[in-house]
Length: 346
View 1 (cartoon, rainbow, N blue to C red):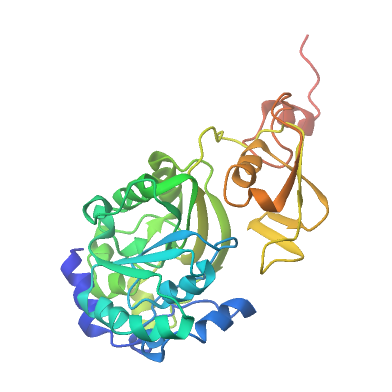
View 2: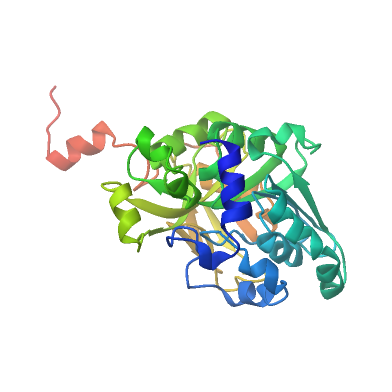
């Protein structure tokens, strides 16, 4: 699929969220109160031109420099601008001139509403981030909301994001994934592509792309099955199934291929502004405030070597290795022997 097809679909065919033909590009109904609060300060015209599929507002953003890939009319940019505050900055990138025109038309309105101006918009392709005048290693967080699936070169997007992140930085994004590789004929269907379906990556290919870019140990945060709710388009995508998933990818040296146990633990202090009782790192690390929480070496690094470090107390180090962290990693032949009750051969 060419850039021109996507630009035409989002710049001319779609004039608002109601013009979408499926429910792929829509956010879940559940939304934290603080997200609702910041969205109340976003202009109505910007809100009506929203085509995301998730919530891309991770914790701990105050003072951060954030990049939004495929920002469209700027809904997430203006929401994030409030979360980073006057000391932070949010840069939005999009290739569709009509969408960026809406975003830019309301910059002064939002600056007056917030009491400060901290957003910038760049026109360009997310596959060519090195051509946008953005300084390498200058962003704390990169977000994207249902846009990577529209990219013609998804590996280039992940490579570029890794290059722009600071050490310890994070890519936190929502997108649509398929349960198998999308057939060529379906991938060339302009409507299915514009609806965020036929450009979707097979989920296992995404994991390979992420690791190839340098994002070891990708973490799934949330996911929800997508129901197309359009009989004609359902028949055109069958038998594929799709899910909307949010991943977080950390730019960290030394992450291991599996979750290794070094006897470490963390205690969450409960100090993140919108998470006084628990911190959710991913779908299997929900860390209750004040409680000692055992972690693998990779999770330790994701907390200790990122912007999240000040919110945790750390117990232990990497001095002693105890093998695979229980419940994680690949299947050990030792575990298989124990499960099958095998006796030692000699």
